[in-house]
Image (tube, rainbow, N blue to C red; front, side, top):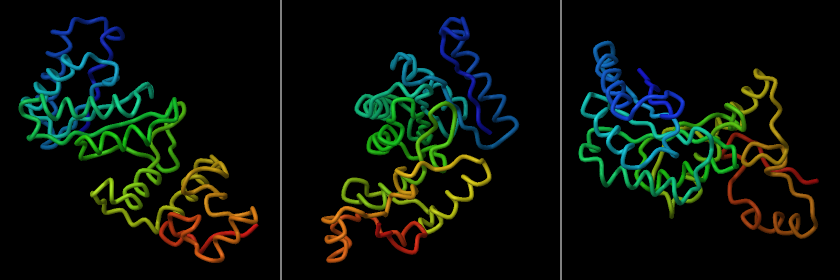
Length: 228
């Protein structure tokens, strides 16, 4: 069961003490209905870190097994968002009893970068979407996060259970069902992602595909690259 009940204080027009009480009571009620509860404090990236720490500590004490830290309006910068996750990991006294998750929006085009920064700083779960679909400018794109982890293992010694060969077929299925074309220059799954046209690029690809391809097309379910 997922709870998202801690709205920005200005939106709820409630005192911090009342917000905290609502959060704790809601988690306790949710636990009476479900053995697994995820708590999500909306607009966490713009909340005072100390108050956020207090809320996270209390909801874990109340029984939340996952605490999701969202960048609800895509406002955060990767360095500061990673720092916030690191702050919670270090200062929430009972953090070992829960998983920190993140949910990043793409209003400034930083959703994937913020998500990766959170992983580097201790997030054990991330919320992502196929093709980066979502509210307004969308959310962190699954294909970008997964293939960064897959490609840059020197920086991210982590793994997922995702079969990367299904990324392209699923991307196309989602695009078709939603009637939302994928932009040609979209990272990983765009039509141009593995297309090479200029002379020097073609020459390099023909000699050694690794010259201009850091990901094998086959790894995401494509048959190969395209020569234009």
